[in-house]
Image (cartoon, rainbow, N blue to C red; front, side):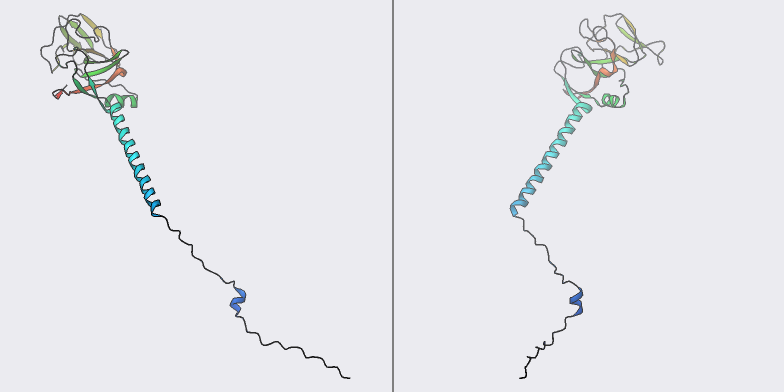
Length: 225
């Protein structure tokens, strides 16, 4: 008996796949999703930024004020009558500190000019006095007259009355002293006996480093000093 073998199934023709799809992976491009920010977040950021700006501005203003007061200018109140008639008790005066601050910064000495009104620092407080002698001067107080001897005035110059004041009280002292380097000699405008504590008595010669600054303006009446 003949045996029949079922014929093999003939595969149908398969569609051709493009070569590009066989050699290259398919690339899928995705775009990042944008997450919306709540309006409240923007408002909070603006508030923080505004507060920070105000804080920085306030700190800068405070620094400038402190710096000016420490190293620029300051306002002082006269306590006593040692500088009358130029300055009276409770008068306010504007004091220039910048020259002394610069001297400290540059490690130099600030020596004011003769007849300048200065604030000097002592262990028991600050004093306002007038400069009559500077480094190298020989100061002689005799017969109610202040005479300075130096290279400019080898025979002596009468400096009893500063340009501002023509008729100050007489000086009862007799002093002959040479001012050390880096020092000044100060006297109050109230030169009556016991009217002023100054270089003639307790204060002696003042080191330049103890000068706070120069008084430039009497605020009561706005009078230049």
